[in-house]
Amino acid sequence: MKLRQRLGIIYYRTKFKLLSAVSKKKAAEIAIDLFCTPQFRHRKPLPKNFIDAEKLQFNIHGETVQGYRWNKGGHRKVLIAHGFNSTVSGFDRYIKPLVNKGYEVLAFDAPAHGRSTGTKINAAIYKDMIIMINEQFGPLKSFMAHSFGGLAVSLALEDIQHDNDHRLVLVAPATESKAAIDFFFLFLKLNDAVRKEFDEMIYQVRQKPSGWYSVSRAINNIHAKVKWYHDEDDDTTPWADAKKVKEKNHPHIDFVVTKGLGHRKIYRDEKVFESIIDFL
Image (cartoon, rainbow, N blue to C red):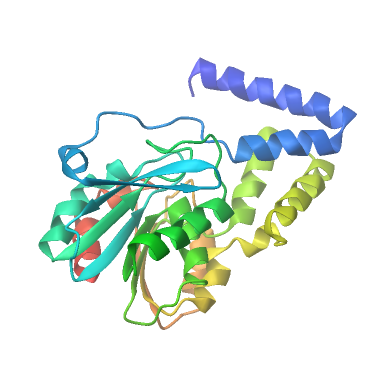
């Protein structure tokens, strides 16, 4: 860990310790703000595929979402959804093979990511974005989603009419929001009183508890055929959470479990890449 990162952690831990002593609610407000704020934004030059793509935009919750489309009018529409602190341009290698299959390919940066506007994102906003993409540019028939994007797509599919002809690729999805929050609180050494206020604020967003924002819950309402890729060494979206879903033996989910690829190398792995293209 770099010195700057260590100093940043010490700063936030000290800040929350002092805030907690004064106001648990205020500490929770700042904690949820930090939790929903990406710490960096990918704005490197776009790959050629993205430069040549048709540019799309729409507004949601006061922010402008930047998107890209290839092969408009293709016989099947597929959406690529990125994770937290990421961008769709990182999935450049998937574009041409899908276009070669005759698909129309859509990819959007979520608010606060890539070339979209905004500074904050949460699962409810990302879910709304997926639904709006389906309404404006769909109907979508296939989805490839990584990490936080996997949670957003799973939640969105509960409100999108679909059947077993649809295809869903989940790559290291953020299976349980509660697990991410647990880690966040442990990392910053926040106490249970702050957590109670934090959970109440999450509930007020959509009158849903943090545990509702869960792929393992939503998957019960998803009728698409699902291919789920997860690495045993993933230190961002724990395999332990995904393993519990696997053990339920859902008939519509096919798991591919890897070893040594972690959270991001997994979608860049050649065998995984080929498998995803074949499935879609």
